[in-house]
Amino acid sequence: ARASGRIAAFTGWWAPTRHRRTPRMAKGKSKRKHKDGPSGAEGGAGPSADYEGPGESWGGEHMNQAPAPLMAMHPSGEHIAVAYGKGIAVFDASTGAQIPLRAAAKVPSIGEGVAHTPASPEMRAPLEPDGLWHADAIRAIAFDPTGRFLATAADDKAVRLFARTPDAYECVRRWHDRKKPTALAYDDEGTHLMISNKYGDVHVVLTDREPNDPVGTDHEHGALREVDHPAFLLGHCCAVVTDLVCPRGSNLLVTADRDHKLRASNLPTTVPLIHGSWDIQSFLFGHLAFVSCATAVPEPDDDEDEGEGAANGDRKPKKIERLASGGGDGAVRLFRLDDGEELASAQLSTPVDPPSHEELEAIVTGQAPRIPVNAPAVTSVDAHPSGAAVVAAVEGAPEAVLMRADSLRVVAKIPVPVVGDDVEVTCVRFDRPSGRRLWVAGTFGEDATPFFRCARVGSSDEEASEVVRDGQDGASAITDPADDVVASKMCDAMAPHAPGNSSRMVSKGTALRKKQYDNVAEIAERKKLRRDVTKGKRTADGA
Image 1: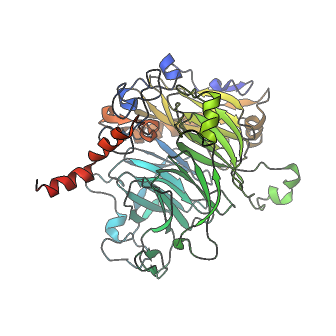
Image 2: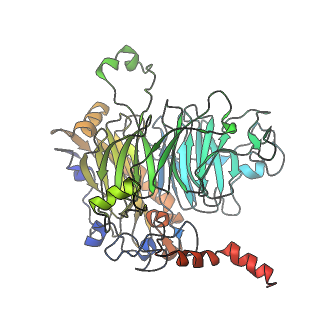
Image 3: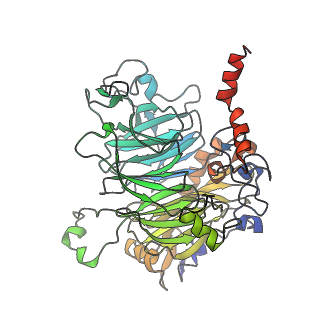
């Protein structure tokens, strides 16, 4: 089917939508109790009219973050990786055929053949008896820029690395972090994998190390060790690191955290990364609540750069100098990486009880305490490969929001065609390298059933770039039945991994929001109830 018109008419991409968009959903509040919790309960309800405070810190029985469907696009566009709950699968982007995941037969490593090293056979094998690759919810998946590797990280504190072969992806490493990992990122060559966790640390490992390569650091003596374990790269002083981005060609690692900021750090070039990254290029301030997601925004191609070399694919990719981020203040913001200047912003959801202009000015200038501005959170962002557009998903809104990358002007709000209530979009991705297809993933219904949907922009790659950049009249959008087949197979593969205890779970936004207390005495009382303190007291009392 072919539809034409302004880019705002994206409903023609998919079949008609039958889900109901209630006023509560329009404000960003899901009707599912496991998403936001009961009103006024400890840990806080989600963004709503009866909002009584943001969420507690990560973890805890009342703060169990719900699994979310995730996607990762292979840089060649050949494969798409999806994850939900404990499940992970890779599909051929054209046919929908599932690519096998298996353990590598042999991996060059100092610890090869020795038990409990990251490359030993038992570490490379799937878990018994179910044959899954993770024992808890997967929180991050990522292909490296060269397409050689796929990495996964989960709440079981395990990080797996799969190497691409002609007919499969083979697990070649499995590492364990001390804390639950939150995000993954690679350097430009794909030789280093960065792993962030909820303690605020970022570690680094080598993806294709040879025997006798020094990989770890002996923190006690400051000496290198020939051990295949993650090395400390940088930290955020106990602030949960929520996302990682390595903008191409910049030699930077951008880390987003729960404390309202992003940080661009220079990766060392004269010494190995295992020595750490201590040089901060810039801080990116502007969000008035936690930063939940970020993406590098490529530089648009100029006409004068399009010559014979570009046609032959020989032109070196431009250095990426911009970054877009989304946060708990309901805003998407565009920054320049060199100096951290905010270039543009778009408010995609309405804050709950927002501060006045005078109060906001006092907060920004440091004259008043930093109290988070709470709104339905932006949970996922991605940039078009051409650098022309940014797409985002907002907590509780059953749609994807398309914006121009230069000004973040909203071009279209695209309803997601899912039959059911409580539609929650958790991941939005443009395919690579053309960006012609827009993929959307999320959940719907009380059982948090996963869905995956795809739409094609324009009748060609060139028109797709023009559509997302200009939104001109006469642009066409196409629904391809082949994409529906691929999406259906993704849904079938991930449906068995839907959580069974969904009534106890909360959304990503709720998990990231901090509990606010009115007085110091209340904070002190809560500290007494910490498990480590009470455990010590019981031991002292001989209990």
